[in-house]
Amino acid sequence: MSEAANVIAQVALGVMVVLLLPCAYRVLKGPSPADRLQAVETTTTLLIGITVVLALIQASTFVLDVAMALAAFSFVATLAIARYLSEGRVF
Amino acid sequence: MVLREVIGLALVLGGVSFSVVGIIGIVRMPDVYCRIHASGKVSTLGLLGLMTGCAILVPATGLKLLALALFLMITTPVASHAIAAAAYRQGTSHVGAQRDELGGRTVNAPASDQT
Image 1 (cartoon, rainbow over the protein chains, first blue to last red):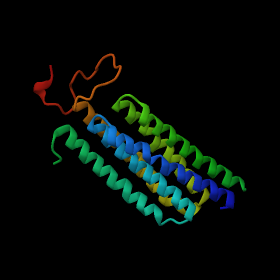
Image 2 (image 1 turned 30 degrees about the vertical axis):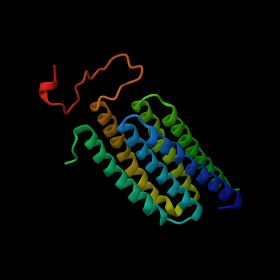
Image 3 (image 1 turned 180 degrees about the vertical axis):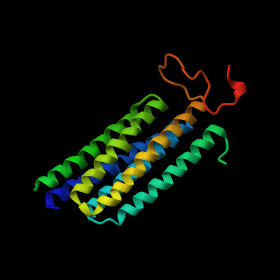
Image 4 (image 1 turned 30 degrees about the horizontal axis):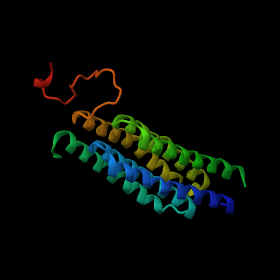
């Protein structure tokens, strides 16, 4: 990538990191437990986006393994917590 | 800059702007269900824009990003649906809803609850 493209990618990375703060606000404030669960799930989505931009800046594919593991664990955890919220038990 | 870089950076910036819009919706929407709707923008359009832009700018990451995009397109709607169903079964209130088509019944509710 050229120098200007690198600068733009780093600005995008900064914006994505700043976006984590409103999610933390919703996790802390959210009136219902489903609000908090949904905000945590959005946080992991944003972290996946951050790792994608990081892979773009470093031009390496290895960072994307982190994104894959994060996506898989976030899916399982969200399903488990949602089941716990609706039925009162996980298994 | 080459044309390929311009297209890739436009896609990356589009993904970032969709993420910004979704997060604004998460902060400002009045209801759990509306917030789930807003967070769907972050996970589909925002992440897909970022990943397409990254695959165009750095073509070596294309295969892994394709696998990641397929996995996310399958799992995120399932997770959003699970959160919405959990919120509904907990009796979380709708803001401004005129009527409840489910009427307190959900798919997995026991038969004695159905009127």
